[in-house]
Image (cartoon, rainbow, N blue to C red; front, side, top):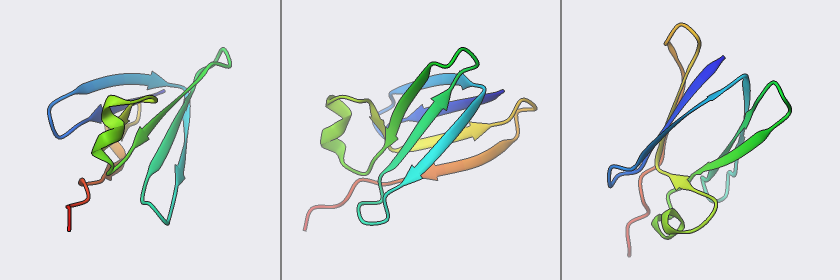
Length: 86
């Protein structure tokens, strides 16, 4: 069992539990898709993205994610800061 905590820079937070997870990273954009898998076969995808515009869209996007194992130890930390305007 894993606990995944998602955060935005503006303070929004959600916490999810999952039996397992898959992390897909896009090397071009830096975006990360985390798919949470449940024992009953359900799955939910949440994005960690540097694109602030996606925070208001769907699916949910966050700038930080911490994944903890059943003992509360962080096993993965994902942090993307918004891309600064040129």
